[in-house]
Length: 513
Image (cartoon, rainbow, N blue to C red; front, side):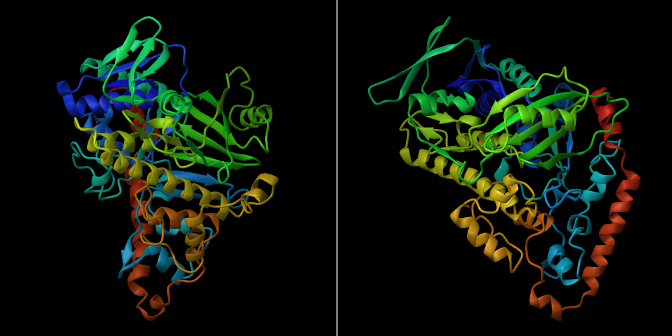
């Protein structure tokens, strides 16, 4: 197997495949030292723990090498109106008598500015900047911290309460050592040509200094360039810019002193005039960037806005301007080439799905690994799963912009009239009347459960205004008691848990956990 391209996608792929197959699979990765990676701070899903567990890595093994921190939620600021915020947490809603706390919240007349804080524990922990682990290393919720072993996304039954932030460049460097220590052959060179056989299958790549490198299976991790999947095999790229117009970003690395700075245990997405700004708190710096549509904002305006927001007076910090290719390859596996990462698809960074798409692509490749007959049906199955996941995230992100109440600039006004995917129109119509469930939200696996869809709708100021009629005929006492238990639990966890910075300082300094 030959992986073309390094970065996070390439080295996650190399590490996972080598761990999966050991010496039974020869893995070579070729990357150029002249091709820069995106290299921003990355936020993730809670399901990424399956990846690290499969590599038999504890948090203390990798987090200190990657400036990593914890992520309990995404905090959305100014999406509803200036000064308003809400959290999208890694936390399923509790249930009472068969109905979720969101249903009961509507029945009991909850304050529509406080849905997240009334129905979840996590927002209180975020506001207090608490670590999800006590200083002895124990997770704040019991029953979720068991050893996963070689499990995958499909095996996640319980909602794990946090994910991670990390420096993507540092993680790629860490995984490069992990992979090469286990036998992955690493070649640093420029790929100057890609050769195909009579069938059109890739036979070898030609490099500047190492000659031709052949393989049976090629993995395209060349990012937005899609060197193998799009440029060589001419696979169609399906653009999503008709419904998701953000096509550029500008990023800064903003240093901070971990001894004097707090580390917020959440990603922040702050709505701006022509897009939104991410803030990803790492240990020792913040990763921040302005995601915008160049129909509404120039790169110069975006950089000026970002600097004023995130790093006033630090004009010496270099800015990284990024052109984003929003959409997906029609098929991520064509002939004997599998695209993983940005070459497969990308749906802007709003819900931290970049690493998730890489992880899903790798796991599904192992599950669909080709036999000697190269069964075409196996490729079709792989492509269905990858496409459905990316398309589901597309619909979920479009919901963010369509449901947001903000409409004070041309960008936000256009978000209310722009076309939306066909399936999403039915979802929004259903959501006007009843909270969504697993049948009425997007029907295929895409990483988000119905509680996420409902959280975004209610947090953005949309969704139903009345509860299900059945709740009016039920005893409200148990639900009221559960809301009180939530408030009581939140206060107790805040009292018991350390500040996130205190736990991370011990972790990064090699202290006992």
